[in-house]
Length: 506
Image (tube, rainbow, N blue to C red; front, side):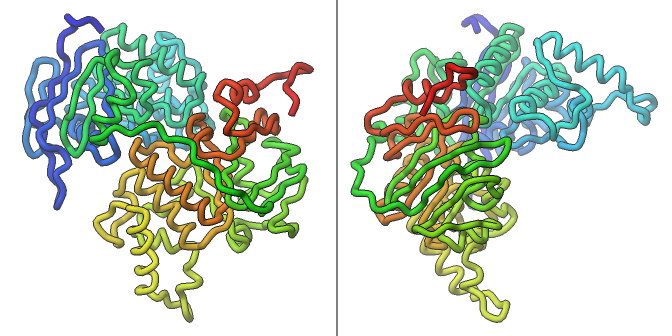
């Protein structure tokens, strides 16, 4: 973006109130043509509400929106589409059974007489867009058959099919590999060169210098600061986001670890991983590193009884176990915080207290009747101790921020008094302050004797929290490293797949 690029969007004095909450307190924001403007802040800072006002999903209580030289009191979704505003939310809005082409034109399908779809026209339009931006994926494949990166690209093409002028991307890299992120960034730079303005929402501070022109920080419903990306540092961004400087999380001083609580020998699931050997000791964090597809999540799912091993042995507290289901694992003191908390870790339409109590409902039930007071007491204690921000225990979990949802997933296993906790990407999609709270919680659990296996794609996180780190690549355990003496470069050296006789040996 050049400094002389005209302003495409100005949001002035935007206010938005909900019952008991002022989400936006007079926010000003602007975007130039051909600019990538990053929007950052903690969960609950007002970022999502500002985007929803821009897209027309919410109507502001005050303020104006000027787009392409015309000022509006508010924009509704239909007007947003006509103006060329496209929003790609973190939670995909694609219809999984439908094909790629059908999803791209969903809601604005070309049709003969408003009845018969112009299938050939749809395919040609999509094919032209893919050629223009050098994209490749099958048009007739159901979206359910695509990976996360391809689904992300389908959403982008869906927005481009409306001839957009402004594209909003909400946490677009959350489920992407490093190579896929590089490809996406190249695509966004191409959009920028063609004059498309972009608002880029992310929790990943390292992405800002890689892709942004400017950065705006929000906190508590206010715009705190707007700065050139070239002037942004991690420290000043964190200071603006949370109101104080947070020093880098220091690796904790490891206390004495106890005896083995879990041993795995030659464990394998065909097509996922094979020949895995590991030992987990009481009161330690065992980190699992590796690229996407290395078998990390699949290993945790096998340990939790979601999938059964085809070979190998699992021993808990010296006794061989065979988990037929997650219920068996829970009975042996296991808990799993899954990578996709909204899909697998929570019942989004149910209250906070019920989500926390799900693993122990049998302890709170007599003759099929739930003791509501005991349930509420257990939940209230964990909400207080974990500093979960919720209006009440009856609040539906769907309405809470990502960080608070994650703490609820952890809370339910604390209620169950787990001995072995499996964490899969425990800080994905949560803000920097919530990350530090999760880190402190992990350390508290370890001090209490809980043993943890943690999968994370964030190397500094693994190095800061783990005692040892196991590196997986292409379904095999390649190396065990001491977290206190290794670094990111060494981890990556073992994590990168190698084929043929030159493969790294354990």
